[in-house]
Image (cartoon, rainbow, N blue to C red; front, side, top):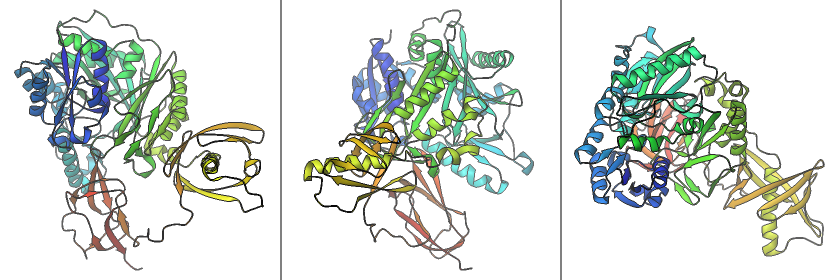
Length: 616
């Protein structure tokens, strides 16, 4: 009988496991890095143990420190969560060697399946040998881990070596294992997976299918269960292959077998020997708690002969602190508020007032909707995200809402090339035209309350400027004896937190929240601009500025001040939130300044280099 569980993970993952443990009467232990000292998962656990340092390699990837933490805190079991050491056979063995219960598959199964190359060999699929021009495009992929880390698509043979280097570095940073392999890249297939659950008595459940085709950088963004549009025959084939994979390695616990569906056939991708981020959609459809079943299996209990019947449809969206319109650049800052309407499941590892830093994955939360039909579930989730209060860094919320409402998604015709085709349309500016006015009036009402508002004599209109989604907006309003007015819009009510406007006979209420120069009006995020731009905020033409806070991890070989560079040439690499970001030359010219070196920490907007373009 398990009494105390240490979760060898952080954030949303740890909080999710803790929730089930508490419901089961099991005590919880968290581990936390210095960067996570005030993180939610460290606060909600019954006990927490510090892992000195901030980098993953020094903390959450240190299995020896985690085992010591479990023993020190009196835990009798370890749950690996998903990510970090969850697919590390050596860690699983260290846990059991210490006399603790491992809530996961046997180390031998992890070794067989967590290595993507060995997993393919078990099912008769082998990776590519030496890559030739005829093999392109190919996918460079980390042997260990998942989540899109250490993956690169290569379309030109000349790019292969550089992409191999980048993938190895990212995989080593994230998983502690820099080995990679190369496989054919299938364009625009559907990513479909099967959730399996196996006990120690020989029973293996195949719990339906999930579609995870909407991805950015090979990392899933929107997932759903069941996968729509699959024939009964194909579904049965996927279930058979998934069960076969589990039985081939005497698997126990929760796992996922992933496939690419293309040209009507199923291509085996990999088996993840852990719980998946998207497991809530399966839980919603089958009415199960997969973490509770993991605990029962680890205690030796048997599953029933057959799983429960699936009911309805579930859709999950991953909410990231990132800017999809700017190369998916991760964002940092204070998360002031995060709430969703009732009826939506929200799995998160952060709460109001938390700071979003640069060290770990930028996912803030997962929002899940369940309904009798797919159309109802999709509509419910899109509406809930649109009405959610998400105050803080730039997020992908607008992208999620537009994706869920895109005709290609609503008609279930999406594939893994969805964002390659539609990203510009999905991230184009579409701010509420009345949002800037509502922000200005809320600000004006707050100032009027402090300083007095209306004037006896006619005056010029008050002017406020805001930026949102890459555009600037200027609004005009007047203080009068009867209150605030705006041309063409009737101001019914305005206070610092709520503005009621009437335009063309239609009244609308806007909720306003201001945090310094950052203003949130319903789902629109605005930045208040100064009346007079700062003349010192200018940079030399050709300046390369850090697009996000992070660490310089590499500088191109031979790159020094005075050398000639070509347009698009990689100059240096930043690491932020476990992802590498390449900084390239904006034009062909001369590198006149280089203010970056490996290990340097930079903030958003920091000058990295200057390339002076060659004269025509």
